[in-house]
Image 1 (tube, rainbow, N blue to C red):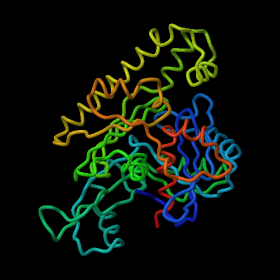
Image 2 (cartoon, rainbow, N blue to C red; image 1 turned 90 degrees about the horizontal axis):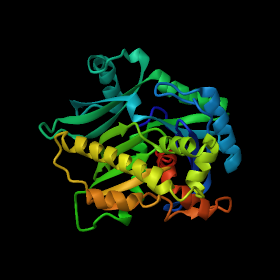
Image 3 (cartoon, one colour; image 1 turned 120 degrees about the vertical axis):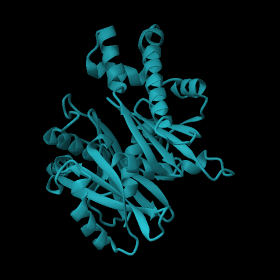
Image 4 (tube, rainbow, N blue to C red; image 1 turned 45 degrees about the horizontal axis):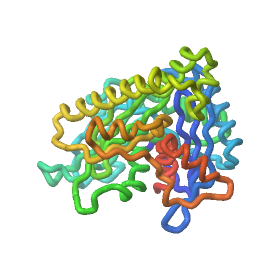
Length: 354
């Protein structure tokens, strides 16, 4: 789903969160991709809230990320969060062209959305033939307040970049999933339902995909920032030092028992609740596997704990296993950060869409 779209030979994806900028540039090499550049930079506190982002602080972060990565790209793909969008599936006449569908949506969308179209950016995607009437197609309408899109476009512009596509995070994860799904899906099974658990700085998002398509999303207010703040408070460290210690190690022997294990327990409980919410939403799909993404995905033993408690196979995301790496990219650094680059990868892949 995109609000702006142009064909590219290479593509830059930028994942903007409340605490970091994650930047990834891909180049197409035959039937595969090359990781050309990547970087992750921290943002100062209060760079964003649940409602708005600070465009100037985000722009400064993007400039730092571009410099650190070595990318010279002038266009980028970004995304709005799931919480910032509204969706509605409508049935339209199958014979309509895309332009005619757009005009029809402009005329009728007001009755389905809580805001005037003047306040919204919207896009649509044909999902397929309506199962009850073959003369109709189901069309997914996706809309977001203009400020959510405009803030990201402005932040890119301040950093010297142009938004080629503004996507939605869930659909970007769908893109990233498409290139790693073959590594663990059962080839003898036709129907697959996979849960992507993206553990971010302040939110943990659940995205359910059935046969590669998003069918459910949910977010919970728990993430890596909470763990960092607990380390900071317990050991009297600065926030920056606590973050480094969390990632690099060197904390006292009681860290795992006192801080890490209670956080992991709380995180797994939230994941369980999100899955229970999915199960109670009226679907009959069983989860075949879980993919862990985000900055906390590689947390010690987290995948094993989730697998043990939920009795569902768990894999840590690494969408780069079958990609070539440019000379500017450290394989060790990339693979260490690969779970947190899942969304940026999906955004970069979106840039190759025509």
